[in-house]
Image (cartoon, rainbow, N blue to C red; front, side, top):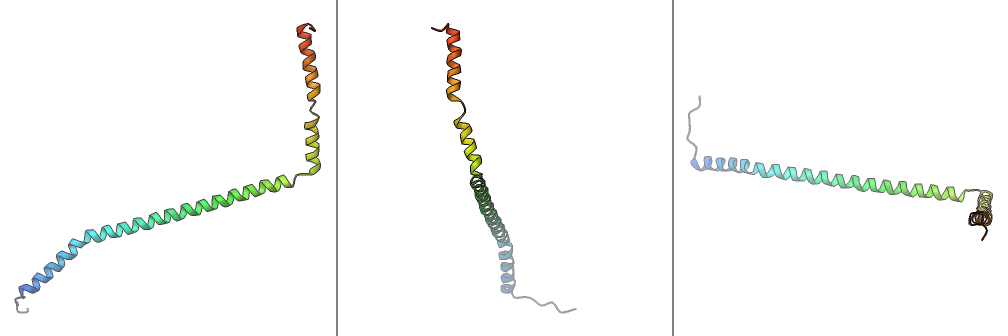
Length: 109
């Protein structure tokens, strides 16, 4: 076995201080690591939110485009026929019938 030798007290003091420094800094290093991890997770959250917003905007533009395409592709004769039906809905005939019914209830006065 080796002969025991005494170590200079200044050396043991330096080693002890460095050990205390490492142990003392451990909580701060751990908190720094947690803060960095949280910041990274939050940035990914915002990136995903922006991406979802962009995709929703693209979908809404595509839906509006499809609607406009359907409106413009409508047959012009079908539009003219619908306009004619609306124009010939018989508004004057309905008013004449209403007047006749009212006269019948009032005794023709």
